[in-house]
Length: 224
Image 1 (spheres, helix red, strand yellow):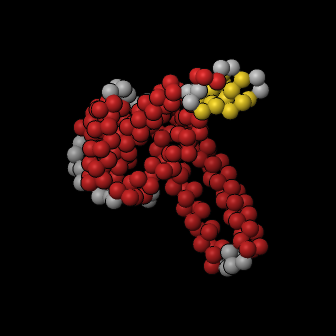
Image 2 (image 1 turned 180 degrees about the vertical axis):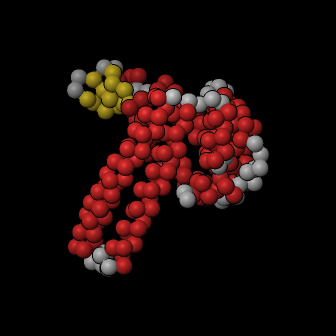
Image 3 (image 1 turned 90 degrees about the horizontal axis):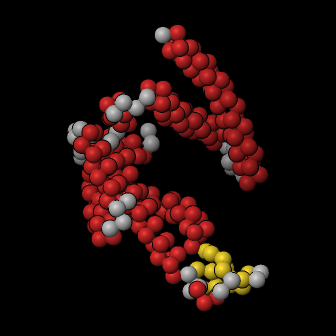
């Protein structure tokens, strides 16, 4: 079981209907994209504390999950904030680049601040939904809002396939560890290569069997 699933299945609101939590999630997304800064700041402060309380997790563990998103947000905003212009006066920070200047101006920096606030508000709202709605409730919710059946089955299959990959990885890793494959640095590289090769081979085999099952299943849908 993933860590996020563990929190979702033991949260304080697991008895609350997923419909209500989904409506609350939509409400939070509306605030996130509203552009009203006081509401967005209030969302960040209240929903973070609410999520930690409901999911029974510490704030430090919660904040660590946001660290993973910082790299992708930074790379995305870097291409937005850094601009090229021939006039140096429009930049707060500028470096000569060919016949112009490459730098950051005040307007793009201000817009980047609004975008970061919107991104983190949406991320906080999504974490709340993921940490308070178990996967089984989520599937039932998707059925209620009439998500196409084939799309729902793909989601369930992907979810199970991730568990299959994780199980195979842990099994192979523990087997190699029992054989002292990670004892020395040279053996460590060799063991990692063996792990990747074995895992890739098993996944190809499992994927082929899964494709056969899906082909039979969707052939049955077409006949109906």
